[in-house]
Amino acid sequence: MRVLASPIDPVDLLVVAGHYPVLPPLGSVPGLEGVGRVEALGEGVDPSWMDSLTLLPMRASAWATWAIIPQSRSLRLPADLDPIQACMLRLNPPSALDLIAELAPGSWLIQSPGAGAVGQCIIQLAKTRGLHTINLIRRESRRERLMGLGAEAVFHQDTKGLRKQVRALIDGAPLSRAIDGSGGPLADRMASCLDPGGEVLCYGAASRQPAQLSVRNSVFNGISLRGYWLYRENAQNPHAENARLLDLAEEMRGGTLKLEVAQVYALSQWQQAFALARNGERCGRVILRP
Ligand SMILES: NC(=O)c1ccc[n+]([C@@H]2O[C@H](COP(=O)([O-])OP(=O)(O)OC[C@H]3O[C@@H](n4cnc5c(N)ncnc54)[C@H](OP(=O)(O)O)[C@@H]3O)[C@@H](O)[C@H]2O)c1
Image 1 (tube, helix red, strand yellow):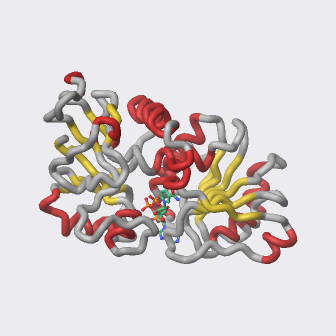
Image 2 (cartoon, protein in one colour):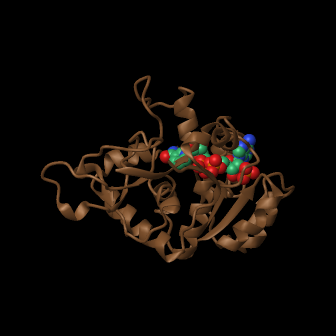
């Protein structure tokens, strides 16, 4: 396969730094996800695979020009899907889908960070499924984008009287789910907005701080905190993964799911690409295009 595009995901940076629970052997080429075009076939492979736009399997060393992938681990995508969008299909869209899966249409949820890749997927997938999202942002400049994606409400994460404003917004409707990828005190801020017995579903810690839950929220209000990890989810349901990715690819193709791109770089520009990927002020994903 000729690799067409691969993002620099936060998890890639954790892997490169040796801070992720699943690490490849030292010396491996990084690149968790990516997309390629089939340019040569091994013996016995169905010839119709030639020229197919194909999603690379997870951890296929996608920061490369070429990849040799067994057919059984490849996923053929709609031919007209934009490769830049397609290269971001495997990680964040299915994670976002899992994080909202238990909510019935009409439900509300609160999440932080609303403007991250997972957060933006949650807003778009939630909207298509009839859910209402309340989103916390770190930078005021991100508000307009999130509203444009279909957010019901956007609050700055330091908003005074957050609970009061959120409860006024939902006007008596139930709110029992917070989704946290920020870590630190934001889990507890969101927990304070929930109904008693609600749950914070934690999937990451962009702030590099452990998610906090106060005694008031955990003990007196019965709020619990549960962890979500796509890696575990896929291991538990290996056969569901491809079907769900193809459904999400259709949403991408139809334009109801669009991931934000900061900048596209050639592999030779990897130093600039890394500098931008590590920059806390970037908006969207940095993409490597071999
Ligand atoms: N559990 C899983 O299966 C799973 C799946 C996917 C991702 N993740 C993890 O989830 C986290 C977010 O991923 P992502 O792809 O959405 O990240 P991303 O696209 O890089 O966005 C990061 C977001 O975090 C915000 N942020 C950064 N530092 C922060 C801080 N100190 N306090 C509050 N917000 C902060 C950023 O705010 P600005 O918008 O202002 O820049 C941005 O919105 C990462 O840790 C990632 O590894 C886990």
